[in-house]
Image (cartoon, rainbow, N blue to C red; front, side, top):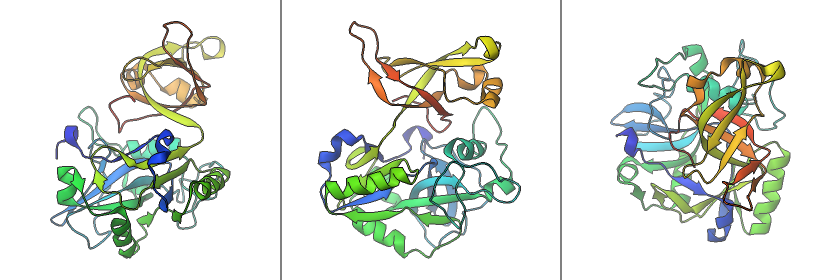
Length: 313
């Protein structure tokens, strides 16, 4: 499968919530790195959402007895002895462990992504901390052709029937009967420190596109932008990173992102690490200009460099 044509099903923004038919699935929005496990003719490989192979030292090779399927989910990193780190206040746990925050965990996972420009630097001890949280299982033929008609209800039931394994878990999922019920659950997830929910129609087919059958419910908004310029800092940040100038795909949003970096990142991130790369940015709202200037973002905060993505929103 060419990584340029790597099939991926994405969710729509919450403004399309009227496309959801209740009762519907409400699933916790995971905060890691999107990954697909492809099991074909007995061979298991792991890929990022844009088709880059992820080195796992065989960590998922014997995860299930399935074959010729695509398993869709999110890679998280569960800290083990020697890798204990300060975590955000989050109540969700797997195997009794709180996953590393997204920036720290994805920093480890990014070292495992195979690239033409660099060698992977991940170690087996680090991949032993990988756990994938799954939410879909699709027939491999349907995945390759970009459409699998089987309902999500049936696909998720099949996924639930797979014997559990310490290397994977199922996404927290609940059937909600109304938008009010979904909003109540959404607020509960935010209180727990989660990003929000994904609402899914129960009759949803698998589609290689941004599907109107699946909608994100998020509080703080997030956007993936192209970094166009590395700006040096002033004062205490003189000589190191001050901000990143970024824009969306069609340049209608342009913003300077100067918050969200810790001291280590300001010292470590060089122009070659970010310029021309996709940067995830959290923000509270759009700032629309009264003249013809591009739209900006209110309170933009750097999240991470998206090594799994090559195109801005």
